[in-house]
Length: 121
Image (tube, rainbow, N blue to C red; front, top):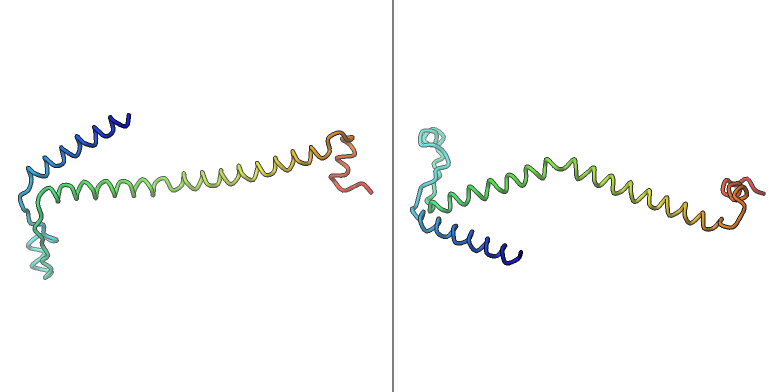
């Protein structure tokens, strides 16, 4: 299985390099459209190879998707955390009951119950 994963990653890397080599032309990215830039006085632009723009867009989309899913799953993580705490509390309570039972083993159950409730003299 590891070999298949490495083969897949190698093929993916080769495909990405081929796409990058085919799209080396420099393109100009403008922060604002020309009319809006003239109106606002902000005319920021940068020249980048086309593959950087494409790969950057893919990376930004993947990161945005991961963040969106992380936000969406917050309620499930908090619910799981509450359930873990409740399970730990119940386990402690069960261990305590089992320990008390082992202490009273071999004794009369009625006397053990009276002793546990504190009614014996």
